[in-house]
Length: 322
Image (cartoon, rainbow, N blue to C red):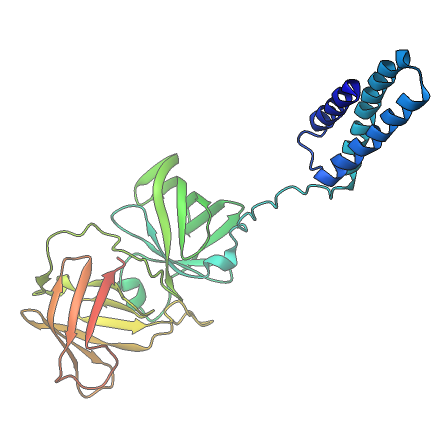
């Protein structure tokens, strides 16, 4: 009996060793142990005592062999382990992703680019580029993989490496500029720059592209309000220069004649300490803003109750684009 008990222990141990790391149920293991226990007992009854230990050892060996077979059956019967699904890689940047108006945040004189569906490019270097009724001669742009090439004017080419995700803000990691682009020339310059979408839907996280200087101060001169501005919380852009302004949310729309689409044109005046007026063309009255303060990068305005006509919230914040 002792030999059989010892053999049973070896059978159980052998099965556990063979099946280690394999999902074998207790029922499977017990079934195999019972089978070999029956074989050992029947062998003891039919054979003389001198061969009983040999049969026991043979049983252990057979158990090992069939234990391997059991492990193989379990493994083969188990569904094939599928590799974890690959993390979807962001789609490559396309020209269609860029159609609209973007600010290129890379240096102090922030350029604004207008990417058009036909592959043409217009550059807003300042409000004057929007105040003209006719759009300037466009440049071009091209996208190839992670390389965006922008040609604002003949002989000036900017090649930039972009990285995903390609949403309302696109990271630029490397920049090469050919001469004569604003007096700059360098090759494969590592930069911490970005393209930030302005139109048709501004990036809600947009921040000033200029270093904010002092605290907000009341505007007193026309130079305080000259510039291209985004009315925060909207897609409305206002360009002001030398007493003129244009405003609209479709300034990137240009017809076949090159005429830009604007919602409003008119004149602007700084009439007092912290007070400005906007008078649209054809309107009989003006829109008056009071308590107008600026730190150059931003304007904070309050619409006067005495204003008439036109659009505008009681309080507005404008963010300088350039």
